[in-house]
Length: 115
Image 1 (cartoon, helix red, strand yellow):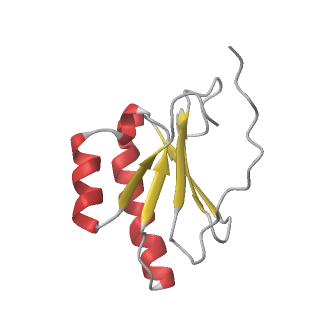
Image 2 (image 1 turned 90 degrees about the vertical axis):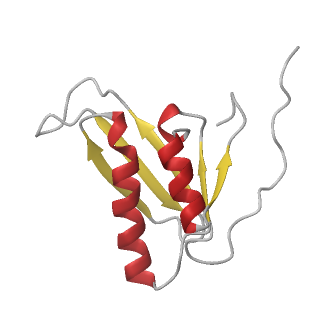
Image 3 (image 1 turned 180 degrees about the vertical axis):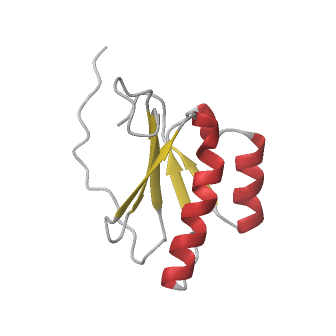
């Protein structure tokens, strides 16, 4: 069985912070200055503007999301509405889920095996 290519056109966000894409990369083969081995990215779907944070461990993902959230919400005066991520363990923790619910942010998890 083969997977057919996706030929449709995806729907884009219509405003800033309506949808944020995030992913964690690492451990990277050559640590960054300071011993950072992981990178977390946040990309706004509407503006395609991206933020990159360096981390020592994947477990820092929640703190980096809080830092990102405070920064962009203060800069824009808008609130994050949805966060799209893969099914990485860093996004499936109880603490992460509780924060998203508390802030009214919808968690969107991509299906396994999709880009």
